[in-house]
Length: 460
Image (cartoon, rainbow, N blue to C red; front, side, top):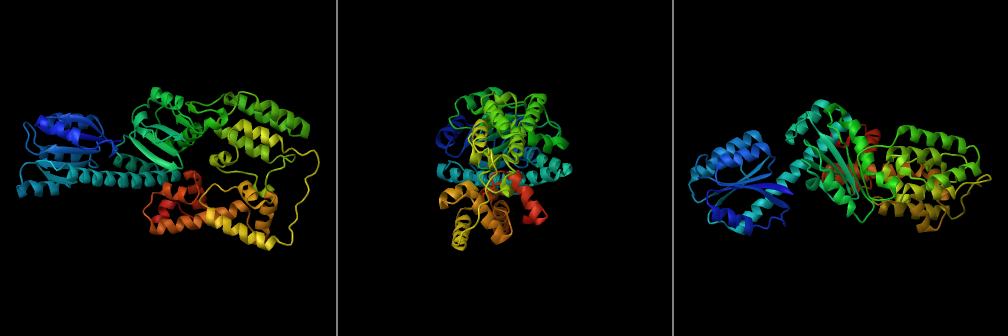
């Protein structure tokens, strides 16, 4: 919700503004009303304000003086001036102050609502742009640029708090975030200069029907540590996958217990029956005490590369690179353990050979990928669509293109992203989602590896 301050020395005008404007429809919240510029300025100095609506002629401090003060302290605030005077001098001064709108009294509600919508669009565009530059700077670990962008977002760089959510609606206002940025499909990053509300986070999770999570890092973060802590808080937001239930995560399990599980996997992996017993036993354990999402992700990759596991696709496709890839194939960590245990082979895995109709299959599969590249299309999904073995499909694509399925899909998505970056005003996170990368930081890594620069630099 955008925060709005109303200032007018006439109480009826303030009441009319509060009652007549469809604030909720505009995703706005009137956080303060004041009868003079001085009171409004005091509030604005202590609180971030998105939109200021003020009368010009008021006692003590007039509207134009208030606007000048706000411009100095919060230059990104959108200002709308109300006045009963049509004097050109006022209009000229308002233009000099770069206000978003200048409306005469009596107030035209329709006209003012349109002006508010335009102001909101300016704020959203500015936030998108700054958010993109911020993510780019964080990925590059460019501390000076990070500080500069955070300052433009009216954030104090000395004391930052981080939170993230996955599969939970945008909850920045409820948590008390000063800045919210979408990272991917149902995935948000929140930054604040004050600690987040754990009580509100608990309420949100308590009433969350879908599998989702909120990660909150408890301590204040230094700018130079932002990239490292961001990895932590993103892992926390995905903890629901390990816990098997909607989760508020504010810490990680005992690392000694986690490493013990990796040791047991190493030992159990020496024989197929021992591996199956270990996975079955672990699937019934309270894994929330044993793994965070980061270690669960690492555990899967180590498990999937075990020689006794018959992966649902070619060995070239075993390793995964992002948390969302796990969520495509499995609902929970426990389900992953059970399904993987079911694939354990007690004899050698037969090689799958192409048949005579492989050419037609290949073209049909490529057309399907081209049509659905923006969706979560794993080899498993394609195998079900064409009623073919996933391993066979992987080998077919490799033999025809020289690329693994993952490499082929990634190259296709990067190409589409380059097209959007050249000709579209979408945010980087929106482009990432539009081409099928639901994990923005995975997208930025793959893009930089393929193109040589980050998406933000490429757009410039």
